[in-house]
Every structure is written in C-alpha cells, then in structure tokens.
Length: 234
Image (cartoon, rainbow, N blue to C red; front, side, top):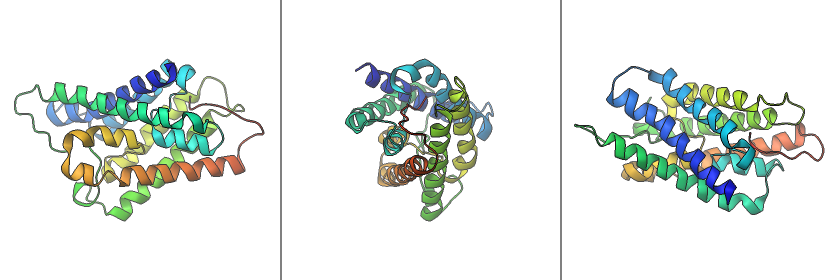
C-alpha cells in the first residue's frame, strides 16, 4: 500500500508540475518559460520524486515504465495492475488540482489543457504516423536510460539525475510533435477534463508508449542486463 500511495502522489506531482508549467506559466500568465521551461519542469518533477519516493516504490510514475521494467525482469507482474491504477488515479488528481487553480482566473479557456494529440491537435500539426513514431522511439530511449541508470553496475546515487535530464531531453524533442506523453497516465489526466478529441485520441498515447517500453525492456534484458539483476526505476 505504501508503494501505491507513493506512486499516486508522485504521478499527481508529475502532472501538476509538468502540465501546470504549461497551462499556468506559459498559457495564462505569459511569463515566457516556453519549450525549455516546460521541458525542465517535467524533468524536475521526475528528479525530485525519484529522490523522494524512489526508495519506496521505485518512482515509476508511468504505466509504460512499469511495463518496461516488467519486460526487463526488473518488476513483478503481480504488482503491475496496482501500480497502473495508482498512476492513472494520481494523474487525474493532479490534473484536477490544476483545473481548479487554472479555472480560478478570469477569462479561463480550457482549450487543450496540456492534452496530447495528433494531426490537427498536434502542436506542430504532425501526422498520426509521425506522432506514433515519436512516442514509440522516445519511450524506448527513456526506458533504456532508466534501465541503464539504475543498473547495479552504474554509479550509485546518480540515477535520478540521469533520468530527470533524460526526461527533459525527450520533452524538448517531443512537445512540438504531440505535446509529449511517453506516459499513458500523464495523457489520461488532462484528457479526462478536455474530453472530446482528447479522449478520442487517447488510445495512441497508451499504445505507442507501452509498445516502446516493452521493446526497450526486452532489448535491455537480452543485450545489456547482468545475471540475476533486479531493481526499480530510481
């Protein structure tokens, strides 16, 4: 139960902090943090939670991460359903808190509310194929970073830094394409409040990240893992 509570809180923080930087600072306060600022906000949410709850739950904060770790033999399948439920609930809670705050400003317009989308709902107008490819590849690379940084052979204590900076980098690449998901829970939270097109396109942001994570987990297990290695995300 402690693990599930930690995952709930951590995922809520990821959505509130990352999406909040986009919705509040960029869209409504016009303080100009831009792509770089939002990307670092997402990276900082993961870095801070990795140190805060990594020793409790592994700080997955993401169904794709949990599935990728399971595929790599680093996470128990018996815990997967509970983790995914806690992550999705946390993401919806984080988006709900953000909605309450954002809607308290005069002239609030829900618009995209940091939801992920493709084609006309892609920030850069990218096609479905381009968006699926980006989400698959960026999730694949993110899982390789996680698996490598948390390997017992890696320098101890630095995994959260590598993972947080890796998360920042993939946002710098992917925000113009899909608003960047690589995380089905993160996509679900804002989509619940946007409804309509965001719910209709949500499937892509479950399928592509999970596929990328599964492949990354299998690749790492076959090529890079040491014998009898077990670990968590952070």
